[in-house]
Length: 110
Image (cartoon, rainbow, N blue to C red; front, side, top):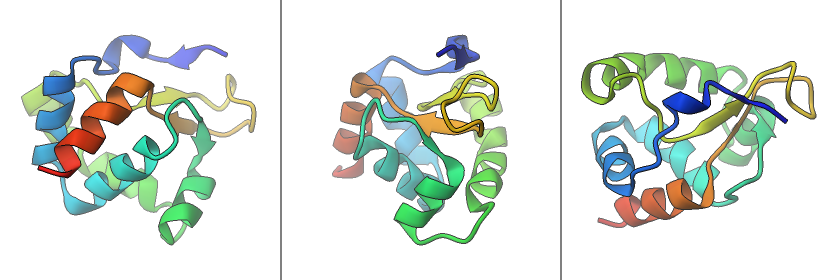
């Protein structure tokens, strides 16, 4: 599968930890959930179910963090995407890799 905009994904643990520290509690919860299954891409509804969130909350959370990403992190993000045309489910899917997951977990316990 081909990842959507892989050049925007963070791979530096310090940058990932800084993002985790600066983001909203909802974004932090999303990152923590993604870090619980590194390398496993899931469609938004599956992640929302795991977090007991209503539908479309992930879209809202990602939209809410857009300004932080642009102003403080050059548009980079501590997670990865498969687009709806590239994913197994035919929907947008989110995941983190092992490096991102470790940095998120480490930042979450500080």
